[in-house]
Length: 254
Image 1 (cartoon, rainbow, N blue to C red):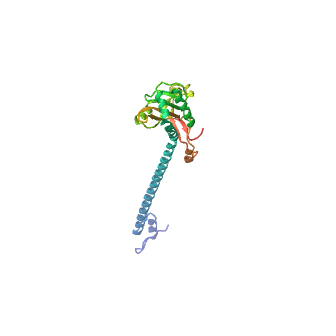
Image 2: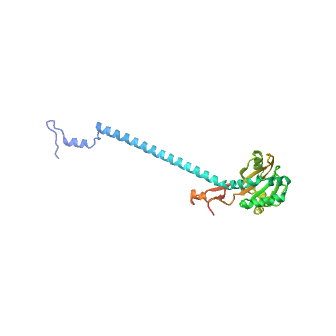
Image 3: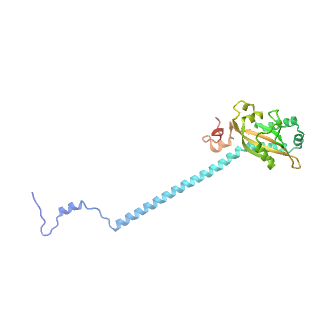
């Protein structure tokens, strides 16, 4: 073996070489400054990207919410469109002196015949009845019975109180619909109910004395919502009306 010893204070290059392999790298001032700037830029850009994405999602959510709100308002207007048609169809005959005079006279036959004529103008109605000021039925379009009190008294009393046409969505018992002449509701369980858009047009004398009201009902169950709903939402989206968690009307045909 040969041993080499340094002479005259000469450094041992071999020893220095081995020592250098275990030394950690050292950064100068420029390197540290570069790393610091890089970290600052990385943090700044990360914050900028996060804020931009967050604001973008918030903007998209707000736009979707506004668009959905607008579309649902249109759907609501379509929902009450037929009720408005019923109301305006009944306002003119309700203001007729002939109707008021025959109602005061209790002329059931004449009023029943008039109801059937009005029903030909609005053939989709399921209930069409005239009551007096005490909410007693004077004539029905689909049933010859009379003299009983009209069961959906709440909306009638509101129309009497306000002396203005009233529109409301009511839960109509099957037994009530059967009495009104809808025979298909006479056989199911009597405690079942159908959802009905109800319109009440009060009848008053020229002096403002309340005489009674014309009441019309449009059953919503199994109702196909207007086709214009599909024009907005498309066939891939369904707009439905539910009753007790069950779908009773839809914008899509089954």
